[in-house]
Image (cartoon, rainbow, N blue to C red):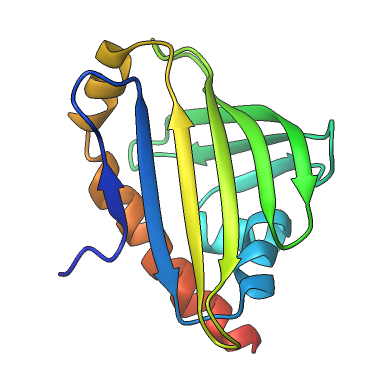
Length: 154
């Protein structure tokens, strides 16, 4: 399967640049990141809290095939409707410290948009550790689900 979500991990840098173009208007891609029911569907997770505003916070929990629960949470530092979200992302009970995420939503026309995620890690080694996991495959699959689910909202 083609990976439509592109991940750029420059050697020696503690950041990732993730880009994905969607065949969706920018407002729907943005909506998919702030409406709990839609987030749950495309991310395959349970949204415990999602305060989609500046100084808001969010908390998700997912259950793996063995029944183990994994929590994720963060704080929203900046929120501009249909344009950007700056937030922290923390995986609970993991060796990874919080990371800073800059999500930018860009219109490429009426029915096309682009999501750019700039993620900053505490260190290069932590970023590289994440990349050894099936991260790229997982984010591509999640973005594919986002496209499939949200296109039905049009």
